[in-house]
Image (tube, rainbow, N blue to C red; front, side):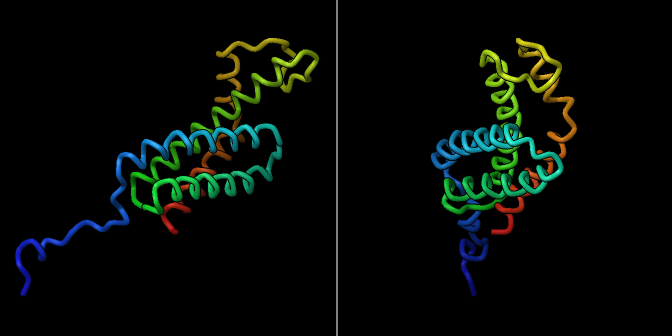
Length: 148
């Protein structure tokens, strides 16, 4: 026999993330994801970017896990996947701004010396490998959080 309070059951402590952990985890995970996104944009690995994207997603997922105290659940999965996506976009943008800001640097697309923000955004959105790599990286991050 159990009393009413014990019979209800309590939520599992592995799925309860405190707000202060999220307040620390989101910016740090986003910074790590942005650095990884810049690194992936700089390396230009092409087809092998799928493997690099998966490893990148695993790394960002591990950062998210460690910062939240190894907690799991939908909230941490969404945070890790969102940080991966935003980090890849930020990394692409940082790469374009760095390569166009250096005098005499080789411009990767079109031969334009100065790119505006809208041109950078257009190039990021129209790059099909970025979308494929981001899907693989998001899968890697979410699977790392889910299958600890």
